Amino acid sequence: MNNQRQPLNREELLERRKALKARLERERRLALIADLTASLKNLEILFTVHLGRESVEWIFDRFPVVFSGIDWDKVPGSTTRPYGEDDEKDRLIAGIISEHLTPEDAVTVIFGNADTPCLGLEARTVARHTDLFTDECEDLWVVCPEKAFCLECYHEGYVGYKAGE
Image (cartoon, rainbow, N blue to C red; front, side):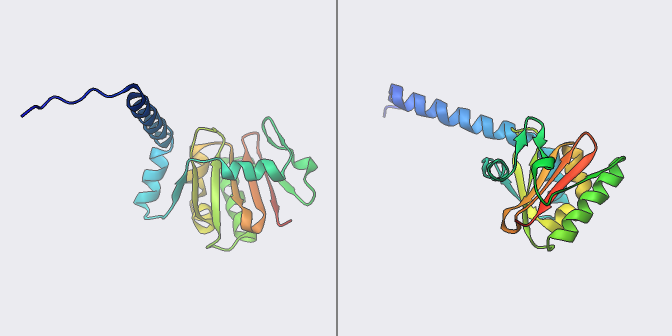
């Protein structure tokens, strides 16, 4: 009986290397939100992790984006509201979400670091646990494409949003 393996050809080695690199990149990105996803699991909150950029592309397709975020002055029908302290910011975000979305509306939370995966969950979760998301990143967006809703929390002290077309 011969226990020696046949050597892999170059194409097989390249495919294995490519798969390993992809797995390591996925793990690296998931580690960026490991504490947040652990908190959500502990609270028994259902969520999905999105590694793709579809939600970000939705924003770019519909809003004037400058380097630092959305240029709300150029968005007809939008509102920007300042905040001071973190608690005020969290209440503001929760209130806007609760006012414009139903609790079961599907939203995506997008974080300011482009490497950070997005999270899909219900609007009620973001409204109830806003601090978990804002503690993860000072800059974040909450979008619900089905309701044409976009909220941006910006680290320089304001929340901008638009609901509906």
